Image (tube, rainbow, N blue to C red):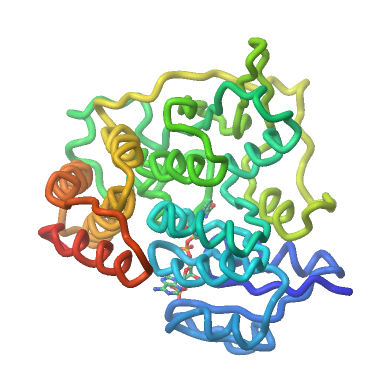
Length: 350
Ligand SMILES: NC(=O)c1ccc[n+]([C@@H]2O[C@H](COP(=O)([O-])OP(=O)(O)OC[C@H]3O[C@@H](n4cnc5c(N)ncnc54)[C@H](OP(=O)(O)O)[C@@H]3O)[C@@H](O)[C@H]2O)c1
């Protein structure tokens, strides 16, 4: 039997690569696809442009939902899949960050598989899956450092959207590319890792690793660390999530150890890139603080991309919003949607 896949956000960077992975594997069948506003007639037997993607999921009842929508808009599809125990291949980290405990509760009720597509979390999932409980001391998420690695805050004054969109190691959609330049992406990933792997925040570190070859490292209690390596290419974690527990071939190059792999690591510069520390703080405070962090960041990134604010205003906007919201936990999706909306509205440029 073929595995029936729905790809949400099919026109995006992850969505397009997922189509490649599905086309190359006769055991996978694309049954549904969605986009936000780009026409997608004929891409899949059932398609939908805009609106709530769960309508398509209800209609097609896929075996696997690949949620590759960008931003909070992916929330309903994430919760729909988790609640029903339908395997969720999750690229849309924003939904897990924003929904937090609500998503975890839905996952516990549905008892399905949640397979991260973020390369770091896919790596961590693979590493942690082999560890006996109680042996793990912590997780290290790697960050490329983005296009502005090594710059001071003063040197970031005049950077433009075009500068920020020039990522050194990954080809991605515009929102996550800006998030990589500010390190907000790694902040979202820190919160994502907390909810995916049930690790306390003080057990999750971030290390800057410019070549993006090591995706995650797990520290064990005996002092050993195990790492997951591969060239940066999202087709690997996408393929892993869509074919799990099997591992199918991809057209990727094998690592060339003779060709001089550079594996250097540094501490992130939290002064130049304060969004990573703000995300950690929001995560530790819990409730809807992570939702507010995400909402404010989405609104500020949009404003930066449209030339309405400067690069360094992004973290200022997020910090202001976090100081103004009460962060009270959301009891249901309606309260979560309201927390997202009110945080966005606090961004002066939104
Ligand atoms: N790209 C990567 O390498 C990468 C790596 C790790 C994680 N991720 C995560 O994967 C997700 C997608 O990233 P991406 O880089 O693929 O983004 P992207 O290239 O910007 O694509 C986003 C997709 O979401 C759709 N979309 C946008 N707004 C929507 C809405 N309101 N409702 C429904 N669909 C909407 C877009 O449709 P339209 O074409 O109609 O706008 C597009 O199909 C993000 O959460 C990102 O953080 C991406």
